[in-house]
Image 1: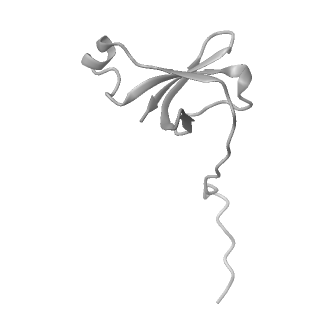
Image 2: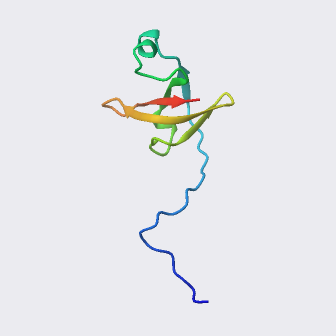
Image 3: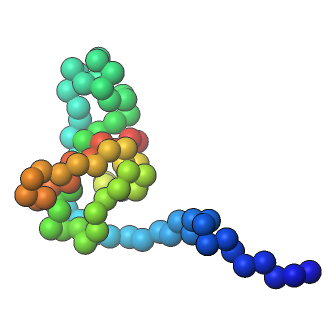
Length: 89
C-alpha cells in the first residue's frame, strides 16, 4: 500500500496549551439577557492583557475558579490593556 502524504491544505489538529493569567468573571445585566443579546449561560470574562502571553480567540477555553468557559467573542480596549470576552459555560 502506498504511503500518502497529508494534504497541505488540511488544517493541523488542534493542540492544547495552558497559560496563567489574571482574570475576573462578571454576569451580564438583565437587559442583555431579556433582549437576546447574550445567552443565559454567557458571562463576561475580563482578562488583564499584560498577564497573558497570547491573544485569546473565539473557541478558546478559559477556566476560572473551576468553571470552564468557551469564548464566543473577544474584543479589547484601544490600549489593549484588557481582553473583554463573552464566555459560555
